[in-house]
Length: 399
Ligand SMILES: C[S@@+](CC[C@H](N)C(=O)[O-])C[C@H]1O[C@@H](n2cnc3c(N)ncnc32)[C@H](O)[C@@H]1O
Image 1: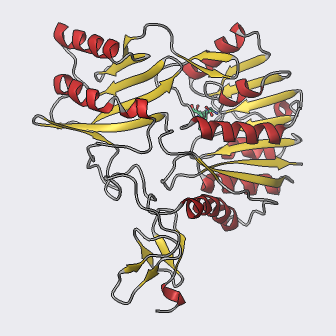
Image 2: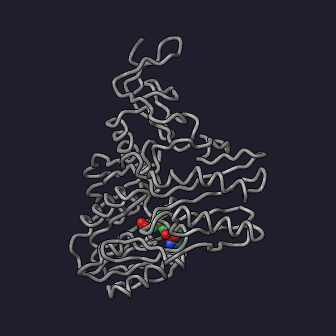
Image 3: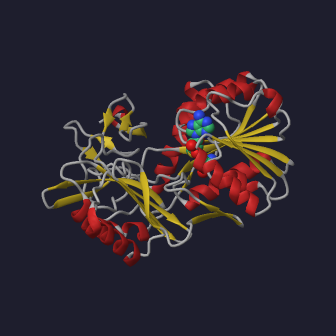
């Protein structure tokens, strides 16, 4: 065996890669590939903690030890920036969310005869691995899987994929069931009983004609600092509270104590409401229900937050609008924010906190900002989706 057989790194999709470029599924950095193709374990392996590992699509990297896992997250960010020839003054060590901390999940369910499978899709297929344990989800979320499986026995049509969305809110878990058939009084009563017995914060179903709230004893909320937002069903929240804390902390550091901040792609206010104290915040967001929730929470709290419903792809803020802010926070969807970033590149905004769930679109946008005279002072990689290849980050740009 030579060094060319050494697994040097993990590729974006989770395969290990040898020094001579071969992709080997299930390998970790430091493993070696023997002549017969078997893997000789190296120092960076961990014992997978879940019986579904390798078949379930929820995790790709349970076999990788903590340090190497954090290196993978950091290297993904470094690699994406290198591919765009963007220089970062510092790429920090990645912050990983702990096991059993995922507070938000969209699962799939399928009924075949009397069998009902609920789980993440299997890796790169639409087969569902019926979940009997899950080291990712908060225990309170996982505890609902068995009762949901039973409920679906009453309301799941045959051989149709259903979406099961779970999210932890202040009052408990909210559950959204999409694609179910709940006709008649028996089904309606079964849903009510289910929600009450499981102390749900909210139960909503979609039978193909829009979302219907079945149960909601009080308007469910999420708090950002002191401010409670009455959130719409399955509103976007960061996947773990540890991940959210890491991103909010990075954003705070990047924007400093400037008196006026814009939060673009604001959602229900994760950043806007977390940083509003002692300053004015402008928040823009394309989803109407999210920005309305943010605006009413800010009004109730008498915070100096102005909220605008705005499509930032079609109508990005232009330099004349941007230049009144001491800092801009940006947290776009996976596609990134090319149009908005072009306007930012032409602006005089002194600091930009860019939060991203896609290192590739972040690096593309970072290149545009660099061309506009911005320096990338630091990047904080965040592994909220533990054991997966999904990587997030916050970057601080200044000019
Ligand atoms: C990654 S989420 C971030 C939300 C929020 N910053 C948070 O951390 O909770 C991206 C947000 O961008 C919004 N969005 C997507 N496309 C948009 C567009 N064209 N214009 C404005 N907002 C958009 C989504 O509705 C979503 O709320």
